[in-house]
Each structure stands twice: as C-alpha cells, then as structure tokens.
Image (cartoon, rainbow, N blue to C red):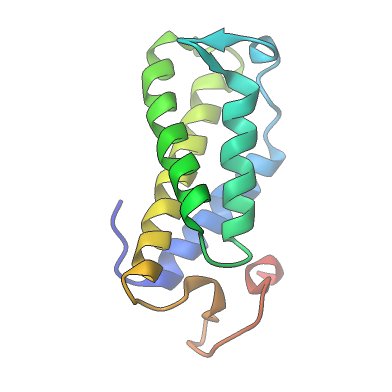
Length: 132
C-alpha cells in the first residue's frame, strides 16, 4: 500500500482502527506465544502506536515498534488457525502497522501532516477523524 495523498490513507487507517476496536481479541490466543511472540503484546504494541499516530506525528520509537511488530506478524501468521477470525484479526493489525508507518514516513519526508487535513482540504486540530 503506497499512498501519495494523506487523506485517503488516514481515512483507511481510521476505518481499520474502528473495525479493530469492534473486533474481539481471539480468545484462544490469550496468553499464547507463537514463534516466540506474545500475541497479546503484538496487539497492544500496534494498537498503542496506531492510536497515538491518529492523534499526531509518529515518532521514531513508535515507527520502530510498528516495523518490528508487522514483521513479527508476518512470521506468526502461517502458524495461526483460521478459527475465531484470528487470521483476519492479525492481518488487520499488520495492515494498520504498515499503513501508519507509510503515512508517518510521508510526514517525515516533508509531505502534509495527514492528521491535520480535513475532508475539504483545510487544516484542523486533533481528532477530526472521530467525527466522521
């Protein structure tokens, strides 16, 4: 996924975030490690970084967490059963991590600050995506 325009990317990230917030954590993955990765921590790490990014710029620490977590999900996905929507749950997490990283990189390279662009193209304060 490569987005040159920040608003479509932020809209997609916001939508994925809303879907993720409504999705229950796969119960059989609580307390489990797969390929040395704590499945609850992968979820928490990505969710925390994405939540922060939706409020403002992605700092280097969170960018690294997202990159490492997305790579970890790639490693564990083949070992996750389809049961309980677990694969879909972790694919969505991976997609959010990758998208937030891309959008954060766009900001670093001098493109628009995506969290501050309204639908009509004007600047806005924090939290504009929640009202959609």
